[in-house]
Length: 337
Image 1: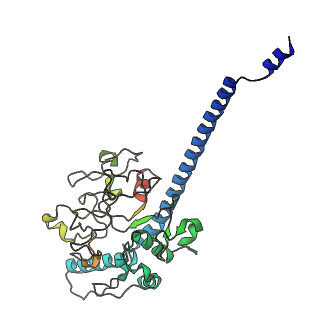
Image 2 (image 1 turned 45 degrees about the vertical axis):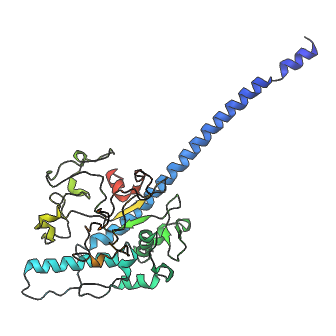
Image 3 (image 1 turned 180 degrees about the horizontal axis):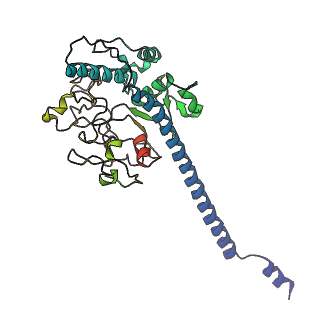
């Protein structure tokens, strides 16, 4: 064999080099996609852990209202129904002031004959002058405010979050808890419009949740009354055991008071909540729960939009609902996590 033939056999043709480069590029692309997928799954896992921890902290406070002593003095001889109505009114107002989901909840004084709670006074001291106007992150800032006054054992509730998970997205001096995509995690104390279950008051108590789910998901075989569902007959408001809310006797409302749970929600990878948040007013001013009828009504329907708080809603008017990838405490419960 000539030396020229040996040199040709020992080298690569241009076509062979292009094939090798193409194969390497394909493998690199597949590896990059796998890494990006793993990173995205890691963010989802962290977001679920954030939402689950916040849910645990808020739920402890939420459930305490069932048993705590209320700042109300009921005169001897008061009819039991009237006494229950007074208790329910004071309890809802305490929820509004101690678990605020908008700035007006903090700044508005009680409409019932009770003092401003100590924790609400602490919230007011932390509200900055810059944040005293309506904020696009109101619900997230109020969540941070609540957690800043909470303790879990001997630890501050904020100690469960890394410094990179705390920020001020709108630069108004009020912090938020940030999800792994850099968006504030939102809190709604009362979100009657949020439910992944389609129900009405004609269903039977104790039926499996799978019977009524409006979207597929891994399902435990649990009774419907375990979850927030719009069906007061089978899942009534547990804070109103004597059923003194006027909706129990006035059919003009079209529904019975049902079990509510606070909503903790992360917008997910698309960074869009697409939930109805603010009932507003006919004049377009800031919404005040104290001004509803009855005051502090958890089931208020928007005057202008006819929607419940928490209802899926095309908030950015792009023609689609983008809440499908939201990570919520309600969703984690449905997944059995």
